[in-house]
Image (cartoon, rainbow, N blue to C red; front, top):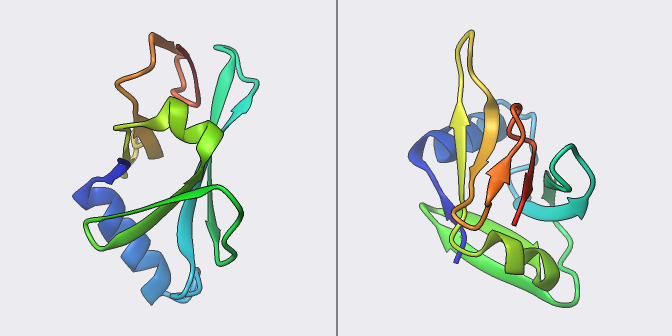
Length: 108
């Protein structure tokens, strides 16, 4: 399962209400090779289903990932932190053995 925090849900709703994101789009998260720790997170807004998509709904938000990424993201929570020192959207991944300082990449 993938999860979404209340803060991330609220920010996504705000983006959709402001017209920055099409209300029909869902959140697609994935893992790619790269970054200083070896694997990097990606988050996009999408409206096209792909073969092997794993679809979850939490807190009223549809979250989609591919099967390969799900192996790294299982039980991960998408969160949002705003303000002057905020990170923006970030992932709380219990599978990560270590993360880089910026939080954009991780290793298992």
